[in-house]
Image 1 (cartoon, helix red, strand yellow):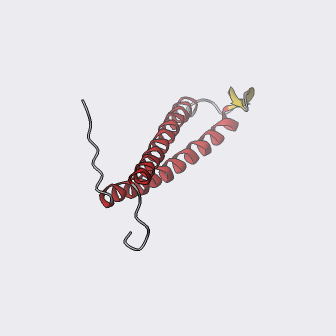
Image 2 (image 1 turned 135 degrees about the vertical axis):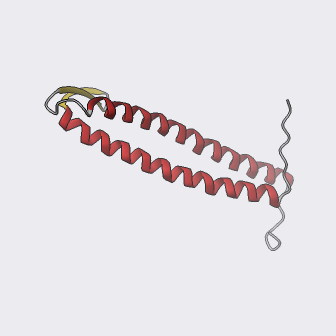
Length: 116
């Protein structure tokens, strides 16, 4: 940062809070996706042993539709894998942002003091 202009205390605080907010936002989204993943896994585990021709219902766009287990199961498994993949990407984004946050704290000699 020697060649760039020196940040004011207010700019440092603003940037610190922005980075902290981004980390919290990513963590919240990971939590939401974990809940979705758990729900998908529970349904997959529940309907997997059932007969493929058995009737089941699925909520699609707010509408409950009648399908069979053999129609629903592949879609659920695909959604489950997609959620897992997105979660992995978000975890990597979180780690990268956390590294950036830690580097920013070190660069500007920021120490967080907790008051209990």
